[in-house]
Image (cartoon, rainbow, N blue to C red; front, side):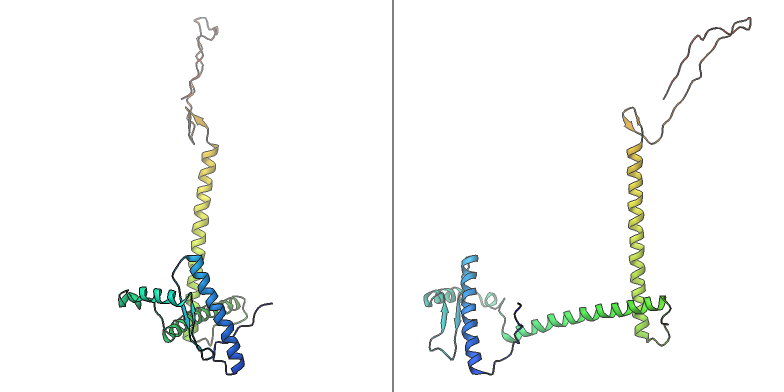
Length: 211
């Protein structure tokens, strides 16, 4: 059974919020531990809460101080290079969602124009009453379909030509150890001598020559 998607919003109920905090804190510290162990990287976590007097730290107070000291030795530009606060994080999420919305709107518009085009080809609808935007989008879709069709025709023709050339090369006879699509042959007729008495003599020489 799949988990129900949790709405990312402040939990108003005190008991539910406290239970969620404990559960998520444990999971977060576990993930930081796994990241440090599996990837052999320095990672630490400090979590303050209104439910505990002391903050939760990982891996230890000394380990956190060591990692923070190493971090502070870095130039300020490097320190803030990959930092992100809540506002920047939300802006990134909003930007990604907007891109997804644009993509879905484009796909829906193409599907809508496809249905309109096929409906018109079948004689179920006509193009009267369409707006300029609809006509422009329909024209663009038709142009794209024509480009795809022409491209497929070119690929089929190219593949057919290649197949014919390969078949012709495979069936060509061998002449002087080489494949040649054309056979050239010169035939010399047999030579017959006739004596003075008009009687056919024996065949003196019979020669066949193939070039």
